Length: 238
Figure 1 (spheres, rainbow, N blue to C red):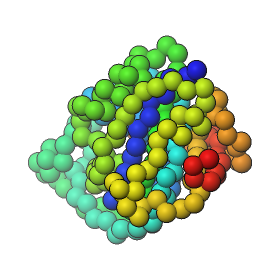
Figure 2: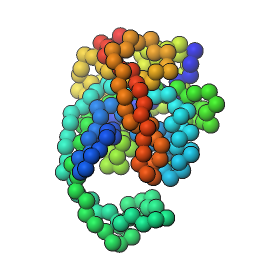
Figure 3: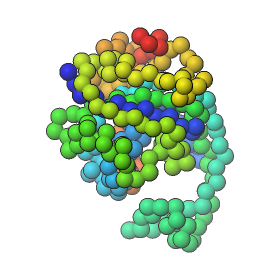
């Protein structure tokens, strides 16, 4: 039996980072590990520039996600005023950035997922600094504001974290169903996609293995390492 932390993600907008080149900022259709680990780190109060703690948390978490509703794609032409980068200066809030002066405008096209919903399952590896229950408690009383990939994407449904033991990932995910009373009309697809890291006893037959560059290495330098995850599609409720 393995202990899993399970919680839900839903919002009117979400953005899950992909490799960005130039002014275009794409989004995957399912959460990146870096986004979910970042959400856990924010709940715990770990700052982005605490590189070692961020890496420890990422290493400790084996990540899996079920796409309950893939949502629709939205592309936004985006303008933003940002201060010039200065060595030794870190802005933790938007207010701090705007107060810095010396602002310049950057342009970008950014992708979002609208009305997407996910169920996340985290298995905490042996020797981790935080237990699954401590992570669940942090999600219930987060220290920093939580969001879905970008600060402009707030949560619109309680995360509902809980911890329990299961023989497989399949059993863990089967305990959560998207409630149509809470999100009417959101999850209409007859099939769902599931992604999981290779060290999990899944109970699923994988159809393919994909490689993503979403393992956090340094959030201050915005560096990420490669990670492999399995993927399958199943009929809803199986």
